[in-house]
Length: 254
Image 1 (cartoon, rainbow, N blue to C red):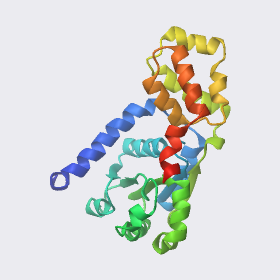
Image 2 (cartoon, rainbow, N blue to C red; image 1 turned 180 degrees about the vertical axis):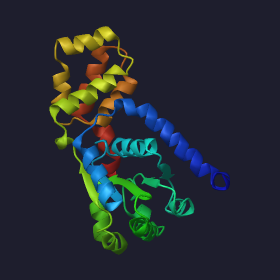
Image 3 (cartoon, rainbow, N blue to C red; image 1 turned 90 degrees about the horizontal axis):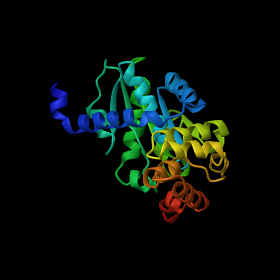
Image 4 (tube, rainbow, N blue to C red; image 1 turned 135 degrees about the vertical axis):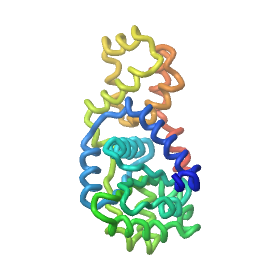
């Protein structure tokens, strides 16, 4: 209770994260990525989830957090820097720590500039040395930034053996999984049921599922903004998939 009072802001953010995860869980489709990442966590206690923007890194990490929380683990979200992890460390309490975009969203300089790479290496080592079954650590980052970090940061390079990566790629999704992801987003959207049935009847969903630029994030963004009716939805999905500038613009310009 004393810890919750002293670090009330951190705990509030973590509780808000868990509420958000529970609301987003309905969109998640289980894949081999989940099983593979869970195995890495069980064996190494630390896992870095890498991949391109919008591929599903964050929701995979969130589902892993939810699974641990249901088993009685305490979830700790690190949102500013590693000091939060050190401050909330409880030796005997089973805890799973989560650091999203731990190397920054565009450049490792966001991290190394504040000596964060050193603290990450320290904390990772502490998790690896902890009592078995009490600590796990999930980090996410974009694939190219993780590669860059290993080249430019001596501390990240030295911690490489501890920072065990699992990569999430759209190419790993079967057409069935892609269709299932699309289905979940449609099912919980505002699209009228008659339009959903029409989409299935004429099999026009295959155009989306088979598109070379298929991305779960594009589906999520478009369905959130343009699910009034089927013609509007399909028009905006085609535009966004043919030219996914919104998804890639920030990384590209940086």
